[in-house]
Amino acid sequence: MAFTGLLSGMAMLALLSMLAGCTVNDATPAPPATVRGNFFPFDNGLLYSYRRFNNNRYDTLNLLLNIGQPPSTSNTLINEATKLPYYHIGFAYDADNNLAAMLSTDTASLMALDGTLEQGATWVADDIHGIHATVITQYDDYYLPLRQQDYADVLEVQYHRDGDPPGNYTLRFFARDHGLILERQIVNPETEIASLQLISIRNNY
Image 1 (tube, rainbow, N blue to C red):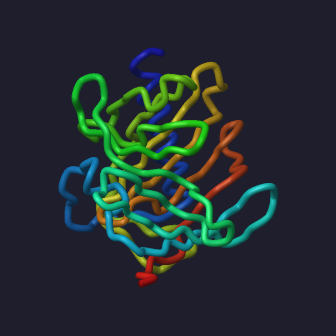
Image 2 (spheres, helix red, strand yellow):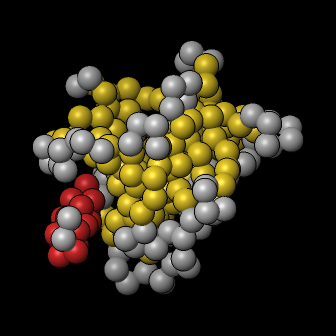
Image 3 (cartoon, one colour):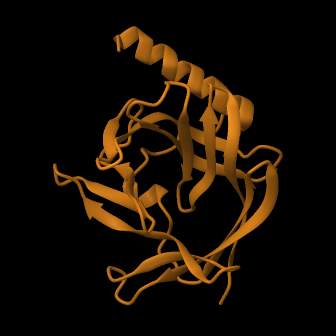
């Protein structure tokens, strides 16, 4: 892809994201995003409630953060309805010895964040399934769609599978000290077919 084409694609993604949510341009500039700082905090007992859209219907997904002892053993986000792991989370190192944040299921492992998270940074998020990640932008201040709470230092990352049309991808938004606050699965290129949007985080213990 030509460099100008990449810039145009990133500009369009940023525009779509601003239409989906709301950014505040006069906020205090955020510090650079980091793998640890923008991933889920390892705070045992946090309950993440998401508004989920899938198969043309909405429901609420409650995920309980369960940190193993020691934390390197097994860290999971447990679906409260099924009592089964929804995601396994943790940190690893990529081939270049950069720190990476992992989101894993029973069938796939994704380097959700990796290395230096500046705009335009790319990495192989899942080499088995051919998924590449690209940092679209970092927002100093971000409001989720139809929500009044704002989040500081929000990183927007696009995930695209090799061979898929350019308009088919997943966007994930990671807020400093909160982790995943928004996930959007997009096709052709502006139709949202699935999403997760954070409602609240509270301590369940």
